[in-house]
Amino acid sequence: MSNIVLGVSGSVAAYRACDLARDFMRAGHTVRVCLTDAASNFVQPALFEALTGQPCLTDTFEEPVAGRMAHIDWARAADLIVVAPATANTINKIANGVGDDMLTTILLASTAPILIAPAMNPSMYNHPETQASLKKLSNRGVQIVEPTEGEVACGENGQGKLANNAHILRESLEFLSQSKLLEGKTILITSGPTQEPIDTVRYISNRSSGKMGFAMARAARLLGAQVILVSGPTDLLTPPDIQLVPVVTATQMLIEAQKHAVKADWIIGLAAVADYSVAQPSNTKLRRSSEDIQITLTPNPDIIGTLAKEFPDKKVIAFAAEPSADTEYAAEKMRRKSVSAITLNDISRSDIGFGSDENELTLITADGKTYESGKQSKLACSLWLLKILAET
Image: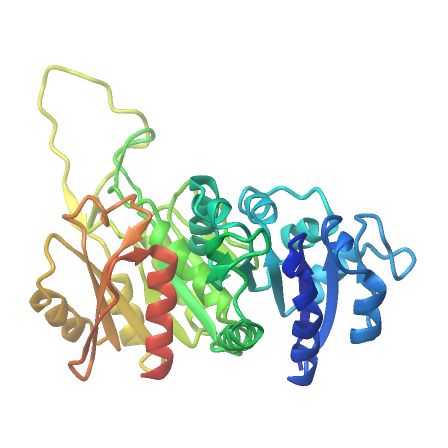
């Protein structure tokens, strides 16, 4: 049995949330309802309290348990937050981090999976700002149950009608089940670039932003795993509930990865590790002169290959950032490193290369099977990959 928070915003379709709450309860879940001010003009808190046997929140400062901040308690207890119906106003607030009522404050405080079922006038649904907000939320891992086409409350026809309750229920329960797919597993992810010092101010590195590794960490957490993220230098925010281990050089990354791999079930090597480091970096700043200088480079350790050799009982997945979509080299790399699978991405394409928010992956498994993700956000690619790995 899971704890579901049902958020109801101010659409005429708010009355349908009453049946949806009961549907969740019939499926064996505890349901607590939070209404926006606008929603309380259509349905009353007392109705949901009678239906669910739980308190219903409307005001930001309500405390059903004296001395306990309800928005924190509800946020942390939730296994899933469903917003149905979700108006354009509520969607745009959620997407932009606004917390000006109890519902949006709970959403800001929670790390639980979120599902949103929009309901509004078709013009409002198709407005560029609403669509941009829905895309932003989807890229964060929020599940969107798209509205259907039909006659809406104002009498107009078009896409904007709240999806039927059976569809919302099915999507919610599948999403809830998905969020437990990797429950009990610990996943170690290496991410970002490494920086190999030349002197005290200069270094050798590459163009990796770390976005794919951080997206993979977020996806693994959304699927219920405990995540350890060993990352080179980036300017990205650490996803919630992720153990971040910051490193700089390839040697540091290997040491930390070896340390944490002991307790990991899976190891995913996403880091863009510099292949070489400076044999003798200067302990002071090298001064400019008119003379040529020579820098001797020495090979860095093969991090994912070393981990695969040292931990043969783990599921180890390598990534191959290649200048083409040709899988031949990636497959050879998989065999050479003795990893469970390898994922190829073509960094020659500007739309999915370094720094992009999207990617297109080809997964090759040790038994020779290949899978194509298609072009998606890096988070969607990560969820796609982890689900396949969980089944293979």
